[in-house]
Length: 61
Image 1 (cartoon, one colour):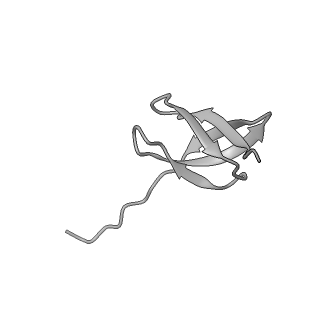
Image 2 (cartoon, rainbow, N blue to C red):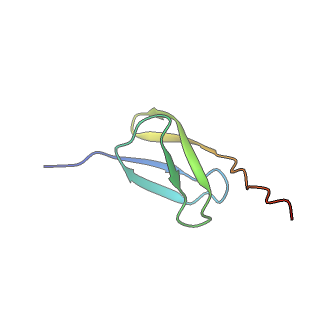
């Protein structure tokens, strides 16, 4: 039994990524630069990834 895998590259550090089957809108972390990435599209097993801006909480300090 084979599991489908998808490939792509981080838009920030260009690390090649291989992930199990996912759907558009899901997020993952780049293992190299630790950015959170969102899947914007999938075509022929290739991911289109966009960086997700993470809002840090302002604790008023």
